[in-house]
Length: 115
Length: 115
Length: 115
Length: 115
Image: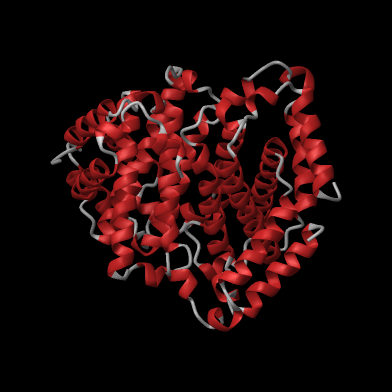
């Protein structure tokens, strides 16, 4: 599993072997991804931000496992809707750079309160 | 942006240049990730599974952008909690293979109704 | 528990007795609510829409419990940010009626694909 | 809109008038609820807990509107799966009281770190 392509192939094979493709509609995968992202949020929900920066070994392991699930479903969804994840992220980062120029954004939380 | 390491460095630099590290506690990043995952679910919520398999160009573009956001926050969170995403996914896939042996899982939706 | 006011008082007392108010910042409660809403989504994620209309007794019970959690956190958050939930819902329904006039909305899924 | 029953009837009528019942499968409503709960989380995601306790007028209004959406979808889902929300919440509160006895829970965050 040394890159996203290898992971995509592994997940694809995993689903095919189990005849699970029929469950893996983009709609269902997007639901599963949202559920996993919430499970990743769960260990953090009552922690202070400070505490969240120094997790116990047990918490860190739980977080690591949920992050794996998020990535697996994200890669699976990308496979189904034919999105190149790294190219999409590159495009989004370029867009963000235009939207939040360093000079205006620096030292300001404006983005973060400006919903 | 040819791999996750490059993306991690780009996001790290982006945050540093804007002095946004203080917002990027693991707790906050896990929230942001859950919010983005829900935004990714939104375009699918009223579609049938069938419709979700053939998105319009506009829908596909929205989905691609939200997937990028999910990946960016996931990579950023992984950076903060020092998780190797691909190694975590590899371990989780190995665990899943033990949990859902092909013979028992094949042709069965049991996993999927067995919460 | 015959109305939302009674529920609010019960939840308030429950938290006070356990000295849990300090955990119940609006930020944390909003996280907990999102986590519970995802747990409510989980039993549905691999079901077809049709299947979701006829849950097994076990599924129905799981769904009922998660709905209770969502309501409890929603009422607790409303208490902390001083929102009258029913008044807010009434205002939102009035707004929705203006946004989706019957004549234009009827027989159209436009709202639902028009994100 | 003086109670949940009135709200349920209003939402039911709203959907019927627009012929939207076909979109309102429990699966779809659970997705919509999760999406709205995440939208409610969004205004809080970069705030400190302290800041979340004193929202600006604009933030408070956004939060109020998202809370309304959560309640509306929750009531609509409850209608479809025939759950009495207040009875479910009452049962869950009784269960929580057994699970977290005052003596053991008081002054302890154990629940909150014990996932």
